Image 1 (cartoon, rainbow, N blue to C red):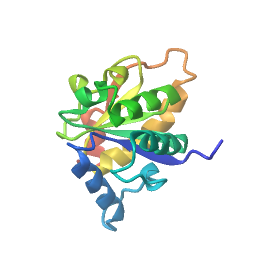
Image 2 (spheres, one colour; image 1 turned 30 degrees about the horizontal axis):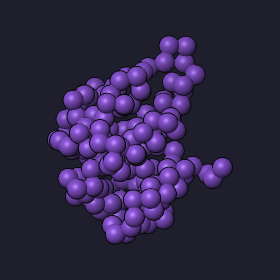
Image 3 (tube, rainbow, N blue to C red; image 1 turned 90 degrees about the horizontal axis):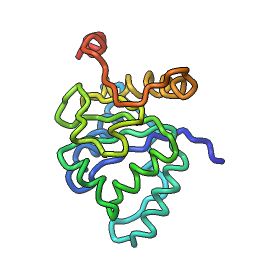
Image 4 (cartoon, rainbow, N blue to C red; image 1 turned 180 degrees about the vertical axis):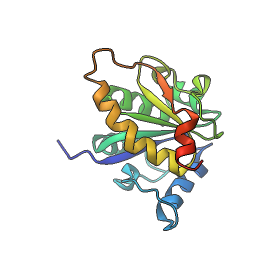
Length: 174
């Protein structure tokens, strides 16, 4: 099995591409402490590729993934519910692989946005919801992912979406 060290970012490609591009810009900005090994940098597929080719590339990317960020916007839940969408495939693959998921709320909410989350991850799966800001996303990748692994062996594991309390944001200067 390949070494899994990448972060997979899932999003509604039509509605939320701007947010994904902004995260890439954060990563490149030397004044912002935000970095991740992007799974999308592997095996690129052009928009004109056949769906089977795109799914094969997604499968390869997810095989190298240790964690996922799902950009949560107004269309996330409905898009993830459509079995023909790539977002649906990504969400189900993340769940099947048992990957830790950070929900980054594009509306800046710090709370769980249950009605915007894909149904398969909205309950019975331990996730963390954060505002779409580089500091708190980085914090979640650093802290929650390790906690997710410990949760797998806990006597009473968490099985629902959680969020950080305000004091965590305040500690980060947010």
